[in-house]
Image 1 (spheres, helix red, strand yellow):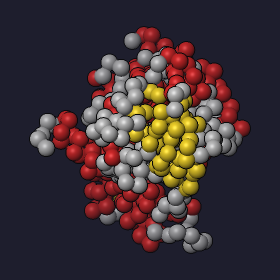
Image 2: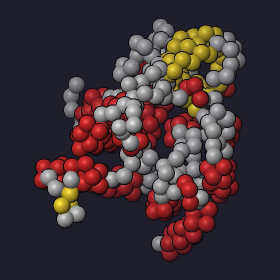
Image 3: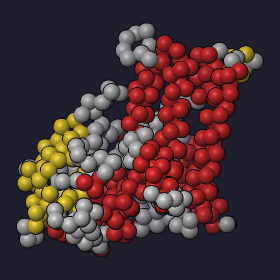
Length: 390
């Protein structure tokens, strides 16, 4: 306990010295790679954290991490949150493929890819869903033909988040079309900047283009970047989905609105004696805030009960479901409290906060689908957690 207290005090002092004031409370993010612009302040913050291994604090030092144990990692996150320090590095490299390689990759694969993630050199995207394989992911048809020391990839993926900015992709491919659909899938990695890879952004209802469609026409994936065994990628794919769902439901995932819901309700609905004037609105705000705090405590308890400090089990599906549905409730409340000011799309009649609220409300619809829809999560909970019959 004394050692943890000393670590926490040291971390607090270091963060105060090194986190630029202009970044505090902004929630700004950096996912790595050469295609994402980064401000001078963000670069200073990233470099300082990277030097200490704090871009990926719980990873082994050999791969660019700090080797922190679960308690130290929680303490560091708490101290960063206390001063509003943004995560030095985010994205799929940190939250999805990195942990998967630590668990399933061989030493050569970990040594090649993990230090580049920790150093912000490479940005990753996820090649899972296809036009005909969404919730039924195992129906995927993207083919990988064995060509000796590499695979020849042909097919397409859809809803591939930020593929237009990614350097590498972790991708599910079919290596045995004659096998039962779950048994003929392999998990491979390959670079996006090669002939035969075409990326087209998809315009979303929220006005942005984070999702893309990817087309592979004789793209190549080296055999050395096959993770696990050929035709045995489904187990790895499911494990990565647990990491993805954990990242969506955990700190930094989901919708992050500006300001607090109580303050917003006071401003738009009205206040009296420093409280929300309308009783029904007060009840709704209290319900959402209480549920959010209870959920945060549940996540913390789940992490503390696991000796490794992780929550990536089948219960992660419950966390992902509850987190995205709670975010959707909050976004709906924001829009409703703002009235007509909460549904603006453009023009001087709306503030930047109001325009962002509209877009976050629309984007929140996607999060109840991304990483597995709410309905899929409830099915997993029913089967794998509660043990209910099919």
